[in-house]
Length: 368
Image (cartoon, rainbow, N blue to C red; front, side, top):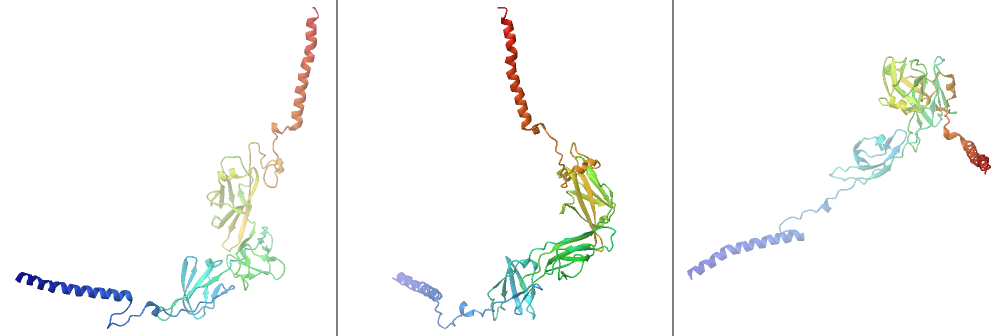
């Protein structure tokens, strides 16, 4: 009996505290799940109670002449174009410059909240129109020795503006007509002016050049399939700019190489083999330290197995395109008349063979 009493007391001592602890934990869980605060504790504010006022949505406008965004509120903004975001701090002027890469894209503008009193605004979607295409204009060549040494820009109108690529500001096109006269040799940029609804256009690069470079050696070279064509020109190697064929720029290192002394241009064998048979004229250009452009014309001929050389007076029979139009005739070019004549002759021979054989047979039978 004493033993049973001891066990009962032990059970009461250990089991009752554990039961009380379990009930306490269950009450805490139920309180958290139900959202009902435990008595004696202060209610905690929810996230909904912490929402901050939203900044006003930006209302930026485009300044096409100066290529800026205007009308922005002073403070921190985020501008997003595609997948790229740009943090921008707007000053009291309410303006920021437009990056050239944004033109033709949609810019999303957000006014950043300070995180304490305001949150970020909704985004303003502002589409920046693409630039107008470059105009079709051209520059004139100046003959060496003429005075004054000036040329023209043709196709430039009052809607356009131009400037020297070497230096200078944009100059409006002529009020009337479409030619700008008295242009010094150099490289010029021409574009459509900006308007209230469009940015300034893409630029057209135009060259006004003087043909003052002398070809010392190599002009009228005839290429016959092996080796290369070498030209030596009286111009500074350091000023060399480019080599053109039919208005297209050739690739240095692949189509040709250039080296000092004064300027030496060597056409590659592979490039020469790619040209059609006949006469070809190339244009080499240099830009001097003053910005003036000078040029020379390089002439060569691609010869075939039976080609006329460029020193042959008969070489003038070549067409303007540089292709030899004197195509040799082959046996296949004899025409239908030749074939008909051959057939008639063959048929006549067939008919004459029996006629010729008949008297012979008759003669052999006569003795009988």
